[in-house]
Image (cartoon, rainbow, N blue to C red; front, side, top):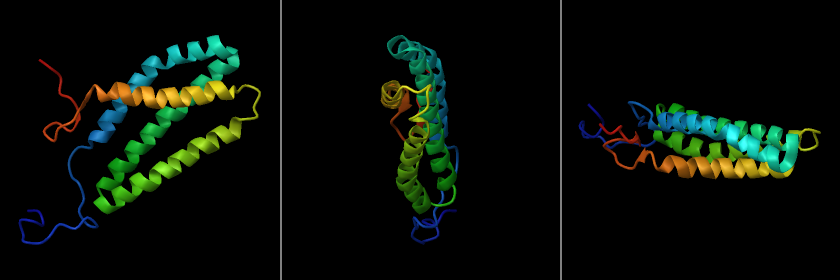
Amino acid sequence: MNDLQNGQQADAFTTALQGPAPEVKVTKDMVRRGLIVAPLLIVVCGFIWGMHGAYSGAYGIALVLINFALAAALVATTARISLALMMGAVLFGYLIRLGLIFLAVLLVKDSGWISLPALGTTIIVSHLGLLVWEMKYVALSLAHPGLKPARP
């Protein structure tokens, strides 16, 4: 029995979510789609910026996919502990993940193999493109959280 059935008020600091984590399913689907389009993005970056662009495109796609995976892992892990922790992890996790991307770019910005325009373009286009593409497949209902069920 949950707290509300016992006559107690549910508390966000102690309430944990049970059941499957739809964000993990959605992220796995986004990563799968990202891996499908990665060769095309790498070839386009290589065509525009040369081999340095291709390397930068691959690095950028890896950063984006790792970023999505970290976001899902944070939410799925903290939701099982408490909603308050999950909310904090979402807020501060975003800032930390943004800092990690900044650090990853900062570490390679002076390398001979990097093309900053290709890297920046890949990071922006990959993030936005995958999010927009995934919107088509996400069910926006509480009956089927996560991905839309397959049609018969």
